[in-house]
Image (cartoon, rainbow, N blue to C red; front, side, top):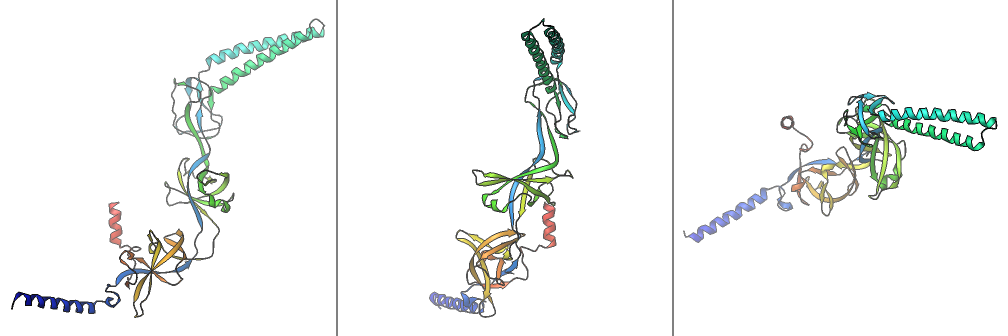
Length: 368
């Protein structure tokens, strides 16, 4: 037996094996593909919660950075950081000794001007003084009174009090510090009621109205939702085509703080039920959104058919199908990566993406 005869024999044997394997392979008649094991879900009608989503920030209805209106050395600080203070309570006393001395002088000057005015009036009644002298005495009295009121206002500016009741923040000054006009002393916040400031696309303008309820979520309390109400809608759309909205939120429990980041969910009117599928059923490509539909191959089997769809809103792991599918159709929800149009399908007993074994969950939890 020569070498060429051996080669021809091996080639013939390989061809026979290939024919036999093709004859025994499921789906070979459909193009030579093995049946792909996939998870399926049914296109169903569901009530889609219509909602607008946004992000915003919490702001106290009353919050302020306390600052002095007058310069001077701090003589006393009569509050502690984080303390609850009442409206009108003295917080910081700036040295006002020069103003106090000036007030004594101006009081004496006012008393003298008032006595001179009274004397001039008596003399005018006796025809000893004239009207001009009375007018001068009256002007002198008024100027003395104005100067005294000015110094008293300056003294009041150096006694810094709480403009409203609330919690005072961390102080930024110390006794003996020279305080300049406008320099911040501490923040004061009344967080009993909060504003939620957020923005929505201008298209939402027709669906907003004062008093409309909304849900607020914050990272500090991920398991809780707080209910607020739309209080004001800005009449002006900004240059980024956003509509600014402000809602009012009660904070009786004191769980929320001004400055927190907030997620906003504003419910709209409910619409008729819509077609929906699990979000995992939709695949995204440069040419659009696609879904694989499982349909009969005519021989008690299933095959994949690629369908272009248009999607709507998403909620709770589901997505609205605006067009492309019919109610009752079955779609592939996992295993799409290996699929092609016309490929044979084998339905899986469960969806590996939505179900998790206890061991896997515990393993992930232990590594967190």
